[in-house]
Structures are given as C-alpha cells and as structure tokens.
Image (cartoon, rainbow, N blue to C red):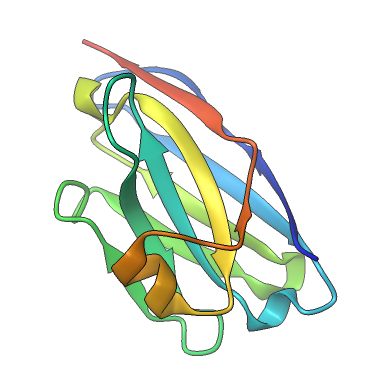
Length: 124
C-alpha cells in the first residue's frame, strides 16, 4: 500500500549535519503519520522522531531533541530529518516508517510500512 524511499545517509564528522529524506508513494499516504527510527549494532531499535500529517505535530526522543528536526513537504509526499550537531553516538542505520496511527509509532514503536534503511556514520 505504501512504499518508502529513503536517501541522504552518509559519513560526516562530529558536529556536522545531514538531512535524510523519505518519499512516500501511496494513494492514501496523506492519511499516514511518519516516523524515523534508528538501530546501531548490538542495540535495540529506537524511536527518533515522528510527525502527524494532519496536524503536523512533531515528537522527538530526548537523545536528539534540540539537534534533530522532522518536517514534511506535502506537495512532494516527503518527510525529512534534519540532523545537526551530530555525535558519534548517532551512528546507526536510520529507517523511515509510516502508519495510520501516530499512537502506534510513538507508544509501541511499530509501523505498518518501513523504508530500506540508510546508514549514517559520524566520525570523531
């Protein structure tokens, strides 16, 4: 139903910035909340940020609050994750996710649809 295409990952020095993009393709994608998750080797998958399409409310994990910004471009059916002041501990595979319920993303850290993942590596 929903296909997610991610881009923007790469290698960056500590203190630098990256912007991740996630394009959603669906006839009903305008009804979906979107989120970003990440998973580092040997670590649990963790929630990073989420956004509601209808209201545009944003939510952030404490570890990234003040450094990361999630936003959306409705005309392009795309969500972004602007990552500033990157730290080595931000190194992980980042996944875009979509779900009809923002509650499912924020509370249960699950979603119906997932992107392929993009590697973000922050060097010290």
